[in-house]
Length: 206
Image (cartoon, rainbow, N blue to C red; front, side):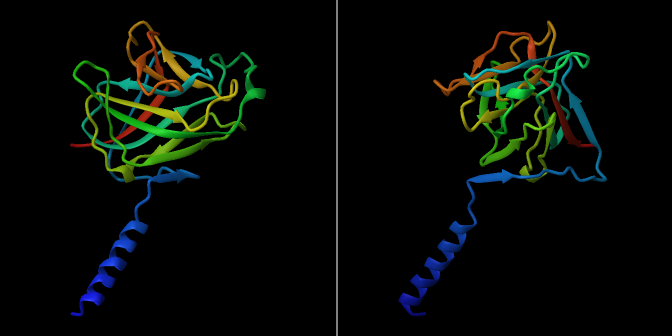
């Protein structure tokens, strides 16, 4: 084969491979499709509360006792009053917010370890009556571990009370919630007895 032709074919192959690499996945609409496999749902427990603040860049919550299997789905909850019979006075301040999905493993000391997602997965929280977002995790092909961290990261700094993250709180929820500010990439324990309100679906291994 002609050497110049060989170089040209190699160049075309490299260009084609590069075009298939995507550093960011933007999810406009997510639908959880039914499956014949058994999916168990793990929900955080406690008294409903909320968290907001323009210093927060990221927030993750440690989830224990996850069954063996594949991560199937995750549901985050936002923008609600902690008590259904009390009006949400912050509703007028909510804005559309772009968020990134975070999933970490756990170090031996219980702190956040390695980020398990090799892409930036972006999704949008609509300020108009969107109380939760459910993401399909099956395309990530991630195995579950007994303990993992799940959460979100803001792509842009909040101006005010742009949105509220719903949490579950009780006295047993110590050291489960970690946060990151815009001033540092380091995760720190919130020292409040709360965790994010989550619903995690796992396709279990029988």
